[in-house]
Image (cartoon, rainbow, N blue to C red; front, side, top):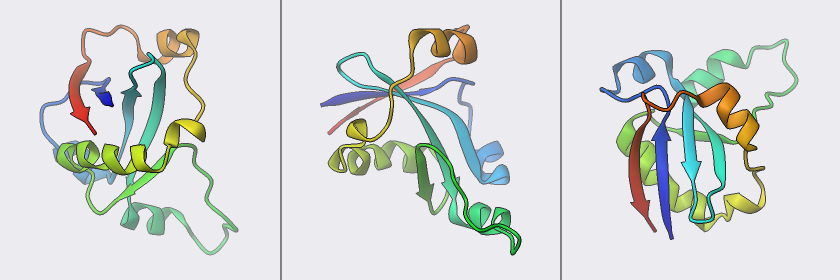
Length: 114
């Protein structure tokens, strides 16, 4: 299976993602042309967001990484594939992709084969 991992805001380096502790501009495209939105977050970022006054923290399509880097994101695709994420995550409609991720000229795409 070949996936395309799309950095929809572009990719130069990991500096901003490492500073923020998350990256939420990632799309995963599978071989059946389904786009999935993924939220990559560092565990420390979750701990900082999860204060005493919160009962729970709910986030769709959450992937927790030790460090949010391009390499870790790309390497996590194999584990996502092994968990059959496509059975649990809802693909984005074309309307949502156009609304939130277009124009595509800033997209940077990396292929991952698992």
